[in-house]
Amino acid sequence: MRDVFEIRAQDAGGRIGDLRVPRADVTVETPALLPVVNPNLITVDPSRFSEFGAQMLITNSYIIKQDEDLAERAREEGLHDLLGFDGAIMTDSGSFQLAEYGEIETDTEEILRFQHDIGSDVGTPVDIPTPPDVPRERAAEELRTTQERLELAETVDVGEMLVNAPVQGSTYPDLREDAGEHAYGTDLDVFPVGAVVPMMNQYRYDDMARAVAGAKRGLGRDAPVHLFGAGHPMMFALAVALGCDLFDSAAYAIYARDDRYLTVHGTEHLPDLEHFPCSCPVCVEHTPEEVRRMPDAAREELLAEHNLHVSFTELRRVKQAVRDGDLMELVEARSHAHPRTLDGYRAFLDHARQYEASDPASKDTFFYTSAESARRPEVIRHRERLDRLSPEGHVLLTEGPRHRDYDDCWHVKPPFGPYPRELSETYPLTAEIPENMDREGYEAAAKAVARLAGEHPDVEFTLAHDSWPGDALDYVPPRVALVDLREERLEGPQTEP
Ligand SMILES: [Zn+2]
Image 1 (tube, protein in one colour):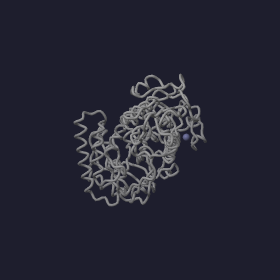
Image 2 (tube, protein in one colour; image 1 turned 60 degrees about the vertical axis):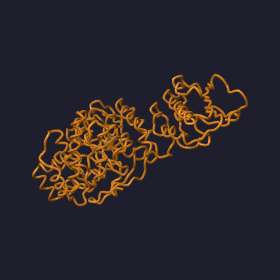
Image 3 (spheres, rainbow, N blue to C red; image 1 turned 30 degrees about the vertical axis):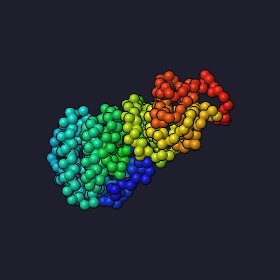
Image 4 (spheres, rainbow, N blue to C red; image 1 turned 90 degrees about the vertical axis):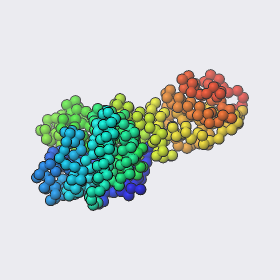
């Protein structure tokens, strides 16, 4: 058990946790967002970060080290005084510069010592951020180098400083899984899923989801996971559902620099805005027109402040959703912001079985809000648990009332399928579903009927359905008798519904 991280609540793969950062003597509540600070280009003063809700920031130790004056000041004053921030400080190592420029003038041992000397609370070795889509051989070879560096990092004496163990592997989920397993086997502390920035920049949320899901399979449940370089609030809910605990945002400042305004539905451009769709202090006190007329520096700072507000607000909303057990509803709502975020959500649903294990058995009412809901972990779990039930004799599975001619009558509810009546008041069968169910919901229910029939070859089943579409009924095996409740009533005496 890793003693710096404690999970307090969970929903899907998402969790609320406490990350203890001993060197800063603070406990950071996760999911946490770390604003990125470029010490040469301060947009919002870090001394103000607590106004937004930041408990931790991230800065780049390599940039500091390469600047003689800055490096000397950092050594003398320490990072916390240098930046005017008394929360926890994470430092990056220059790996990003390595990916951008092909070489850097430092190595893991030196940069970890430097990070320690300037007072960093969480340091990073020099890993190799392999970009997406490279040949597998290259991804595997660079991963081996990263793994050697993690093993080297274990041997460097850094006192109480926590150390990141980045998980690489490009767009190969199995390499990500191997990388996660290896990193988890070291005695390093925090696990960034690395090199996802190029995927984010190209809106490849599906590849991002597959990379994270791969890394998570290798990592233990108690590993704190950082999605390195992911700072757009539009994807926080999805990334948390995938099991990420830390995020960092350079976006708040970079976007502000060219008049881009973040929202949870995507990015707006200041010149296009007549109204601010936000109630943060910046947006309440100014109109877009006023901000447009401001000098560059003032405009950039205000936009960056809004960008931070909207990001931290979304993070709080995500945390509350984990607490309430309706994170999946939030992920689903956010996924409809953009076709590519929908791709990301669908890639998550491809891993529903993986995430089913960590999903609580009981939580807030399940809302069926789109066809994607039919593939949620709760639906998969219900279907898989049907084999724990023991129907006997001739069983009516019905969307209608009970009927005396059968040995037993079970309810059927899309997208879950059949269940004994005594489970009616239990999660997730209390789900709110639309009056007009979509094909995917009926298909999921039909697959569950098929599974139940397959598990119990000696039991006779009749499915009484409310005019399910033909392609859904195609999933039901021929040995299950069908009755369409809209076309015919079941013969014989009925009992109350
Ligand atoms: Zn705002």
